[in-house]
Length: 400
Figure 1 (spheres, rainbow, N blue to C red):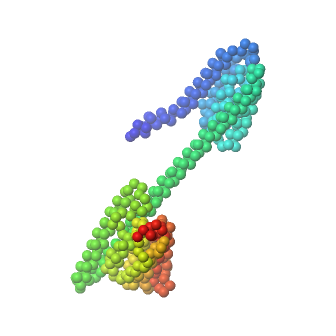
Figure 2 (cartoon, rainbow, N blue to C red):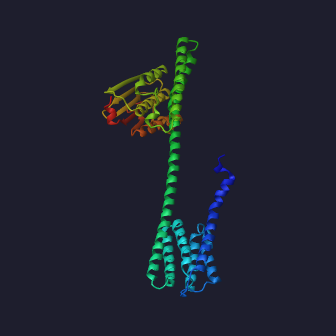
Figure 3 (tube, rainbow, N blue to C red):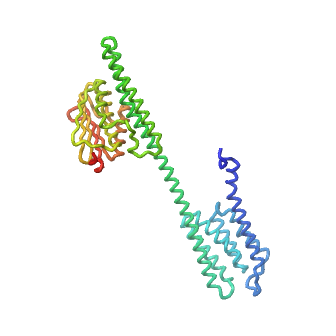
């Protein structure tokens, strides 16, 4: 446990502000009383100091210990006591500081609609006291209390606005931290789905095939088992790479794509694995190929991977085509199958298949990160079609 978190230290830190307010109030009373007692008055301008004067000063300064708890109440009480003090004609200077401090507290803790009125009231009380100034310095006294009132109000209001700004910044930081955690959770969920769903689908299909032909066609069963082993090893390797990236400190979006992760350049391996699961795929690339930014490259690969995974699940006998087009400032990907009986509800988010829904959500989230769009809908001639369109920065597009 750190020293600052020790219970005794916490209690001391809680008591210190209260003790400080009490010490300040008592100290201010002592200084004001000493000034009142020792200030010379050879010309008899002010009323003689008596017990009532000291009592009024005590009523002015001692409640200031509670000024942060009851700022407006303390200000009103202070104003009444000081007004009475001035009306009785005691030496006026020792009471001024109490009024100014009470005004500062209201301005720092209450909204402007309250502090405006407080400042006007405090100024009237202090101007009432300027009639007690020595002859010849009345205008100077008026100017002094006016400027002092304005300065105290401005300082208090500035303190309030600074505190409000600090609070807003803290809330914004907390909100940013919360969003960062949520985005990281979404990233983890998306990566886990993309890494696991495809390989597990292949493993599931191949396991069924191996079990079906285990006795009648051992070579086919062995090839299915080899595919299962390869898919499992690749899934583990991708998960390890993913964990390495997720452990990095604040990686940039494109830095989330570690070496060895899938990309358009690895479509052949993906197609081969899908074909081994019983789904023939025809791949065609058009346009002049160029190096895509890592994040966009992985986005396109994952969309194709998810689309082919859904073909394995829902239409394993369908013929499937994958089209990749390199445009001047964008890349387009289209995956289409001709599976019978394919309808929108089967592939829509929130459908019976939770995996499919999560897959579509993940595809759209990936595309959104790079300002792209994904559509997934039944094809006009039957089957299902997934299309991705992602803009590519012009510099990257011409940097092949």
